[in-house]
Amino acid sequence: MEWVEVDGARLEVSRVGDGHPGRPAILLLHEGLGSVGLWKDFPERLADATGCEVVAYSRRGYGASDPRPLPWPVTYMHDEAALVPELLATLGLDDVVAFGHSDGASIAIIAAGAGAFPGLRALVLESPHVFTEPWGLAEIRRAGATYRNADLRRRLARYHTHVDVAFYGWHDAWTHPDFERWNIEEYLAGIDVPVLLIQEEGDPYGTLAQLDAIEAKVSGSTERLVLAGDGHAPHRDHPEAVLTAVSRLVERL
Image (cartoon, rainbow, N blue to C red; front, side):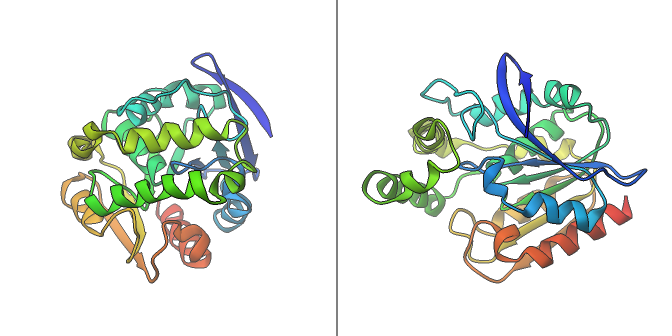
């Protein structure tokens, strides 16, 4: 584990693998309740499978990184996307495949579509969302009840120093009435790199309409990997399929 400072905040970073000559680094952007630790052994497995250096970081408010004041605005993912150029410069990365999961995928889309992802070679978008869907918002409300009344807070506290900041920053932004109109499809046309889309067919947070919208509007080529199941984290539920698909993408770059 190492530390970097971005926009005045101290962020935890994990770097795995030396990276073969000529291979891009893979930057992991975690989900809405994720962190460096919650990737578990996936970065190591991804580095072994692709021959790339794999870099993961915890955004402000997550993992052991500095907290972010509550409440978070509905535009919190736009705010994080705006920090990507400084993050890459601080990490010394200028040749990158971005692997974004859920919120991380949305952040990658915003940054890439706005031309704020220097050195970007390709996008891997796992369980992405580019607009809200009623059942996804309902699932987040259910997560709020589980956090307050069951053991979700205890489980998340293993991975987040400021666990209430991580949870309520995410939950309260997504359940704010203004978030029902949240939509980032305007950024898709600005994406001209290859895109790998990964999702489980029964993902409770978003339907395959999310992938349809991305495929229809990006300027670059797309590939879709739809997997069986009703989970939100294919890299945990179907690691071999995800590793194989990402490896093939890297080989084609």
